[in-house]
Length: 192
Image 1 (tube, one colour):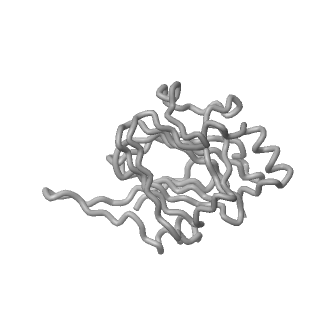
Image 2: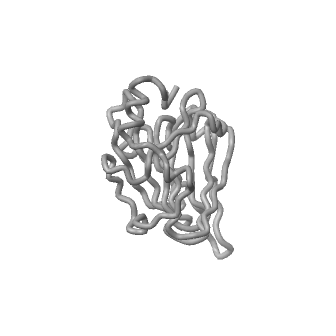
Image 3: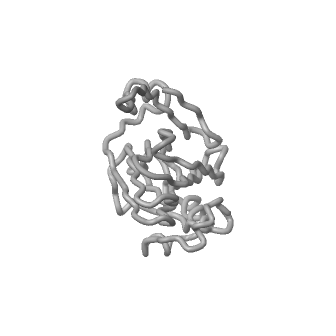
């Protein structure tokens, strides 16, 4: 497996080794020992799958507060997405910085996101399916987020975002500044 730290500290891309022949391919996509030694010692306790039918579907930007802050190891099982990450860790040197990566089933690239980051993605191919392993269970009482098109963040969404398909919850998320005020006042603790 190859891994590379990205511009936001603690965020890694991981590329498993694929062995191909005339029948197809085989790959070890997760090895707990490798993961703990090279990426994070946080245990991955649950795996989730998200399926999006339509191009332009946009999910996010979401996170969970401590003690349910989630690290995520995600990969695209089918289709193509534009993945977006924003660092909201108060003591991070990359606080407020974002990272945008196109991920696809064909590329096989996985993405590790430590706790304390906002995460969202935009579907670029119909019937896209994403798998993500997490370090904490879903806890709706600790969930929070930021509106996807916050002008202060100015995230580089694909042109499809001019008319995104959003959930009602995602349409009504607060601004980045409102979230940062809540973090500064300790109303939200983004990581342990």
